[in-house]
Length: 169
Image (tube, rainbow, N blue to C red; front, side, top):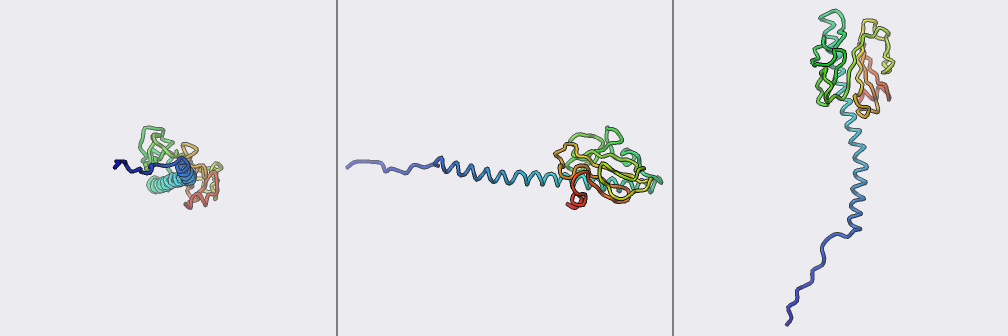
């Protein structure tokens, strides 16, 4: 009687099986990364649009109290150590005059010319109006719409793309 151990089949994966898994994962990543980037851009744009609307609301409140629009962000109550003529928004939607972790930088201008050529703002705000623009701090923040803007008469614009599309989503 011989004592022999039963032979078990070798366990593991073949190189072909591993290559197939790697190819499938690569295809999934190739599809997911652009979608994720688009999602991040849309989210950043939404943060900037909300901040623009908040700043426009603050401008209107300021105008009611002071019979004219504010000429800088300090007068609108935007705190920070940076220049009073520039404000920033972070991914969390925090408005400040500090540029740390900023997604967009905001510029506030009186609109004496009635146009916003850098932002394709439609309409003609009055000479006593204002315009606020939100420019991406890093170009990849929003390559589809670029600089967003809003005017005192409620018009909205974008420096790239179709403004209506940029403000819709």
